[in-house]
Every structure is written in C-alpha cells, then in structure tokens.
Length: 387
Ligand SMILES: [Fe+2]
Image (tube, rainbow, N blue to C red; front, side):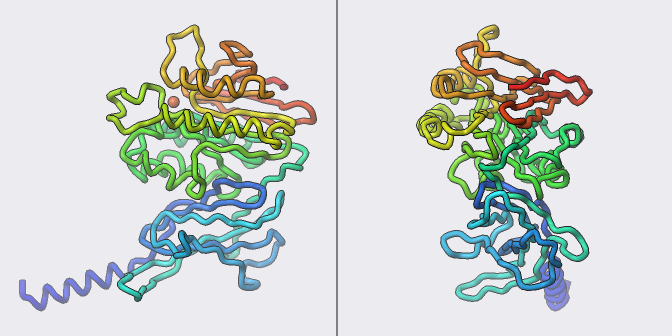
C-alpha cells in the first residue's frame, strides 16, 4: 500500500473515531438519598465530563429556563471519566425533584488545552423527567422492598419487583449477591443493574447492601465506583419516616485465608472497623428516638443447628452483642437461599428473617406496627406478620 493511501485511511479512521456520538450507556440511578442530599450515577461510553440539571417538581416545561447545574467534580476539577456521580446538596426533606444527566465527550486534554466534543443528555423532549423524593424523618409512615441473592437473574428480579409493587415503595434494598462474580462492568449492568434502572432506580432510592459474591472477581475492588461512590463506606445508617435502618457489610463467608480469595481480602479487620462505627450508631440520639429500628445485612447470624461458617461467626461475635439490648425490631438477611424465620434465638434478642433467593420482602409501617410480608416468586407467602 502506498504511503499516501495509508495516510488517507488513517485520516478517515481518525475522523470516524472523532465523529462517534457519545452515549449514556447505563443509569442514571439514585444512591445515598438522604433528607438534604441525593447522589446520581450514570455512565457514558467515552471519556467525558458530566453534570446534572435539577428541576423543581412543579410541572414546568424542561425548556422553560436555565436550570441549576451540578458538575461531577473532585478536588474542584471536573472529572474526565466514564462513571459519573454527582451529589446534589442543600435539598429539602420530603421534597420531590426532577432531573436530567449530561455527558460531554472529552476529545483531548493536553497541557492547558481541552477539546470537548458532543454533548449527550437523558431525554427531556415531551417526556416526563425522572423524579425522586428526598427522605423525611418526620414522614408519618414508610414502606420498603428488599430482594437478595438474585445471582444475575434479570427475569426473577423483574418478577419480584413487580410482585412487591416497587413503584409504590419509598425505597428498595438490594441485600447482596445480585451477581455471581464481579469480573466486569458489563456483568454488573447486564445481569441485574440495567433492569433495576428500567424498573425503578431512576426514581426510587436504591440502597445496596453488599453480599459476599460482590466481593469476588477482578472488579470487586471497584464496587465502590458504582455503589455509594460519594460516601466513605459501604456500611451506613439512615432514617426514613419512623424507621431507622442500619445497613451492615458482612463481607465474605469464609476465612480471609481461604484459597478462593487468593489473599485479596481483609474482612476480619473490616468487620472490626464496623464494630466501632456500629457502637456509635446505637448510641446516637436519632437511633434511640426512632420508633422502629431495622438491621439489614447479607450474612445472617449463626444458627447453631448447622456447622457454623466464619462469616456468620463474625456476625455473631462482632455485631450481635452490640445490637442486643439496643431495641432492634427486626434483622433481615439473605445468603442461605432458603427462607427461614429465627425468632429471638441463637443469642439474638430480636427476630431474624432470612429471605430466600426467590423471595421479596415488603414492609410498611402502620401506626405502632410494621407489617412485613415475605413472598416467593411462585406466589407462596412465607410470612405475613405485624411487629
Ligand atoms: Fe451470599
């Protein structure tokens, strides 16, 4: 091939690459929604800067006027990346907002010169914008939905969300093991998260409680890029209406030394770190004065009818002594893939519900009671009880 033909081909190739329209490929989805802030996460297919436009939920046309803009930044600089996250701050409790997310292609960044390319945004023309509501501790009632151990089954996830009337809930919890192994970004989205976005996560707060399978694979250490990206930890506590939630990260089920972890884990120390945090949580004024207190964690405490695994032993020895005598109403777990109800046994002074890998837990407060229902995908009601 002649030199000038090669040059023309190269130019064409460069032009095609530059002309490729940027796309938003995943999200947006809500994370870390609180009373006065909310985080949005979305991904573009090329390196870009990102921002959110925030709209009041007042029915005005998206194109009425310039809207408040919040950039994806870190240390005061617009981040050039694909996984965008923005925490909207200064919001009002119990208030609905609408939003759009944007990405602008970064074509090159050399020295002090940045060349930006196309802008892409979520749809606003003749469609209802995504809309979320901040939490409100003074809200009289709340309701929520929990699924766990979906293990990459989009169809089961869709079915359980539909059975649990996801759109009517204040929030959704993923209680771990949503995938088998976190070995690629595509796995995270293709096997459950895109379904979550389609079904609810653009509008309804999602709280992700990590399971043990999320801790495996070459992307395991990047989990925090996608979940709670603007918070320091994957364990957290918050209140909605009358319910105070404690979300524990119970780590892996085997000892850190097990060959399956190839030496990458340090969960004993990580759980010990949570102990100090948990002590502060149960001592807090907000926790003590909440009407209901619910703990959500993937690995359940020890059931001494079966030989104990290390993860459960850790939960039993490190977390349960702090939770006992603290007024916990209920703990909700997964992991075993089998529905089970443990009523104040094995050292816990509160009931523990273990949801199966095909079950959905829905709960709603009704005055002085919390009504809890656990239903299997085949329609079987495993539990329906007031607390
Ligand atoms: Fe598990």
